[in-house]
Length: 473
Image (cartoon, rainbow, N blue to C red; front, top):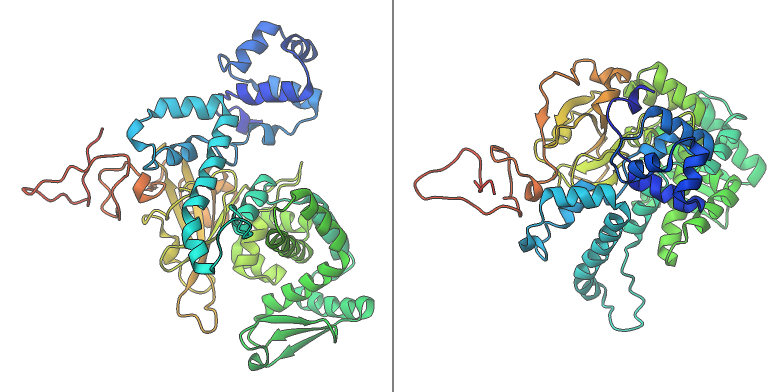
């Protein structure tokens, strides 16, 4: 268990929550774990770290997953809480960092509640503009406070982007089909026709008028634009098959997620069907073995499974099967202006969840083709990450270029071929921040905005190399 012994683990609040969920008092749990009640009390109060031996006892006694138990919470952690408390509404209170750390580490439930309230506040702030844009408002207008996309992102994050039942169903179908992508596409079309009476037809782009795929329900015909590349055609056929053969598993997962409205339900159904299609083309066990054997060679994996960079990146973030987990990647899709159109935070997203990206992250500089841009970055708290970016093919009719980027903690670098030129421990890392308004680096010449938590310190008699000089305290 090398990863668990690299650092001292103070998980008292999680241990306390587990005990309460089990309906045990400290004496009962201590007896079941073979320790004294006073020792357990010290663990719950973070006065002693959890040892690897104690983690194994917990796992064996209560059948918990150690990685899940020791993982950083998806929301409400110190970084996110600091972002929220830097909002103009409460910034003048000047909450000290050690107070933020104490709340986040010792009271994770409170931190998560604050994060949810802040999301609601953000939605409320946007509500007047949204109602003006849509012409809606007033009581009973049907306007929801949580946007469907935000709800879906939170739902996927809670699940770790892994849906075991759907993965298993897709893997069972894939076992009956050929592995070669060209043969697989033919087999999918044949299966659609023979079992479901559906045909697949490639048509001229002008027929679909800007649509890449369209299913004609009356003729039971899936029409694909000639402008759709081969990975897109393969994915479209897999998607259509999953709507037929995995409909029950997808509907059950959507129901468990309890979508708040019809738009959210439809969005979740589409997202989970996309997940199923990816799992069909890249079956869990075979795909995970390929990633490990190739050391996550992204262009090779794209060719082997006949997928695009975006499809591959999505799949890499979903390898969360118990006992067969992949590297916990985060993922981002970024346009040339540095705006995120997609994001999956994974276990360790190094940037702010609110606001833009750090301009020192070089992901947007990825070149077209199969060239992977690699970078070693370091956050203000000393954590190191390796990131990898690929430029996406230009979308017909769009002027801009987009990039797909994945990344993970630097400790996983030896398992990734694209990190071979980087030294994750001693190499020169690019210092990045969460986002300019929340970054305290004073010497950053790439800064676009001053930090909201500091007072400016500008004088007419000098100009510093870094824009927006500010006071340290």
